[in-house]
Amino acid sequence: MSEFNNTQNLDTEFPYSPPSMRCNPIIDYGNIQFHISKEVCPIELFEEPGWKFGIFNLKIRSEIPITKKHIHIFFTIDASGSMSETCTDGRTKMQHILYTLENMLRIFYEKPDCNISVHVQSFDTKIYECIEGNSNIKMENLEDLLEKIKQIRPGESTNIELALKSASETISIYKQNNNDNEIVHIFLTDGEITEGSRDYDELKELVPNNCTNIFIGYGRDHDSKLLSILGSGMSNEYRFVDALEKAGLVYGEIIHGILYKAIKDVTITTCGCDIYDYLTNTWVNEISIGNLLSEQKKTYHLRSKELESCCVTVLGRTIVKTRQFQVLNGTIEEQIVCHPTPALINSDLIKHMFRQRTQELLYESRKMSEKLKSPEFSFTPMKKSKEENKQNLEIKEMKTKLKEFHKLMITYMKEHELEKDPIMKMLCDDIYIANKTIGTRLGNMFTCARQTSQGRQQIYTCSAVKDDLNYLEESAKWYSNTRKMIRAQKLTSSRNYRLMSMDMDETIDDLTNSINNQENEEEEIDNGYQEEEEEEEIDNGYQEEEEEEEEEEENEIKDEEIDDYEIDTTNNLSPYISDTVMTVMREVSGMGLTK
Image 1 (cartoon, rainbow, N blue to C red):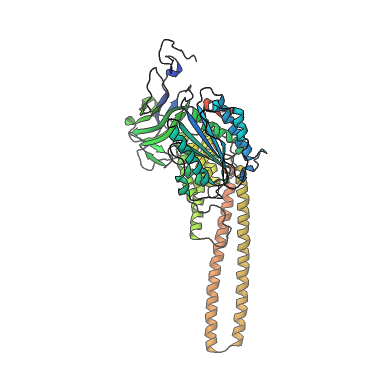
Image 2: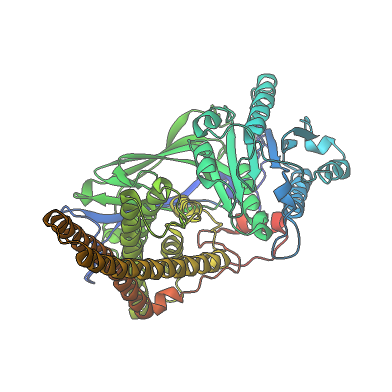
């Protein structure tokens, strides 16, 4: 669209006049809908009667210009020995990271409106300065910068404490000298700590202040619990890259968020209704959602008992001009106020209700995965503590709940011809991955990633879980067979012991006739009977466990359709993607993407 330049105005920073797209409001529209449908909903969201489920839709306009604010991007890259491991496509982890980093630097260098400076450091047990802070990447020789990052090589152990301290100190000095510049710290690691502090609270204190921190974990071996703690907070986040060959998609989404901000520090407040907060799994009157970006479409869930009095207000910092001589002073101001309209109140929102329940179950799964003690096979099959038995029971109940909900969604999709609906398919993926990974060492990283991407409505969704599940299933079979074998050995040993005891008792009867010895003999017999009863109780316990396992196997046969469920991992993109972010993701990843 033409920009309709006005050569007579004096505002050189904003030389546009209506009907230029640049003069349109930043928020295209916002509306409220409530579920009032004749169709019976297959799920009940609220225990208390009277609540009505609704949604708040928000759409940011297109053609948001690249931010002109100076942004300093600080990269901290794990260069430990594990980065030399080979991925499924034959390239090493480090080769993937360097390829993606090279594409990012090219974007910063070639986009004319970018005002970017970069600092790159790598770490193992030492800190290696690769590119030190510059005033603007465009003032540097791009090929020289690319040559410097190519020198990063996998080295020794992983010392995250050292890396955080170095980043925090360097960023603090930069902030003192460049107070007006925005700083984004991107921290990349693929493994667990092998040197330095392992205390989560201590490491959280080392996270740089006065900047945005984005912690990215690669592959299944990183410490997801640590990174989720480091990435907590209003300005921080944690991302999980399940397939290294698709790391560029995550970086593309991150770069889009850096360059195409529309409104900063956004808060949504409600009156006459509650809004769902995925972080706490609660209904509240206010949530903070960070920044809104170009072309974003967001949907938030509401509940209300008085629909006509419902009101939703969006607040945030305006950073993009929409009229000449507009003063942007950085204050929080009202962006849009919405009330329900009669035409939108009577809506069918069953798909959104499925999404609501999915988010609630993802929250439950994530919290369970976070508290599980050593969520992996203990390999002590003969005896389990009460705590372990309780933990296994909780996992079993949660898996049943997830599987039953998955069945419900698939049934609904078939009945309403929604098998190819992208939203419903995404929700099924969420529940399937949570069900398959909970109770394993993959549970926290996958449920955390899926819950976060669903709650924030992010573009990249981790889905490369199939190979990991095959590995876990093989381990589970080995574990189950080992338990059965040791159980059989125990039963054989206990029976031999009882037969030997009976032979000894008969020999004692033949050799002694005294009353005292007879009394002792009777006492031993009584003890033998008691031991037999104890052994019988143990045998019954084993038998009950075997019956439970057989029952589970029968249920697995009945649930074949759920277990054979296939996740589409073509490009890992959610239905929330927009044209602008797809363009950036293509540039960074080098992949040909389609919606």
